[in-house]
Length: 187
Image (cartoon, rainbow, N blue to C red; front, side, top):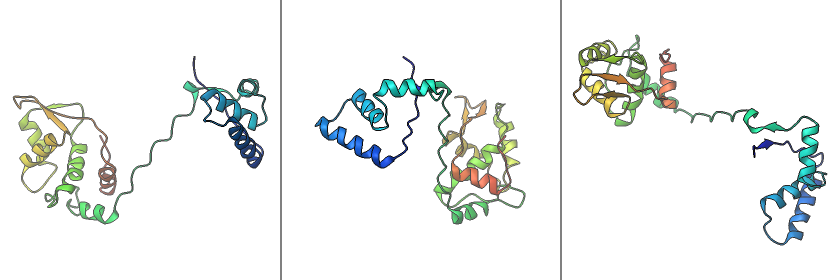
């Protein structure tokens, strides 16, 4: 049986609450699912749940669950603006990573910025990846970046180390805010 979404409208929430409370008190136990649906329907002025369903269908208010509005996307957690400023200072005015962060917790956000600039859905040899990474930083340690990307799961490599690929994932909220601050978009 497919699920149908039914709206429940009450003109007077106070009367609704009194009626529902009275029915729950008369029940003397925790009502089952169908009993509770009937109580809610009666409290809103219908004979029972079936009457509520028929009224909603007749009024065109019943919606199959597959046509329901998608759930709103969860809000991203707030980003600490002081930390974001510190992270942005690790990049030069051209958006190149100019120094490796001193704190382990900041490394991942910097790696996300580098990751976003690596072309997606491409396979790289180690030499090709080193060339890409050298163009994205100015402190001269592409091996550190390559290891960090692999260790964090942002890139994969074959067992023999011949091929590297970017792993498509969603960056953290902090990384997205940092990219926005640096004027960067995801490729």
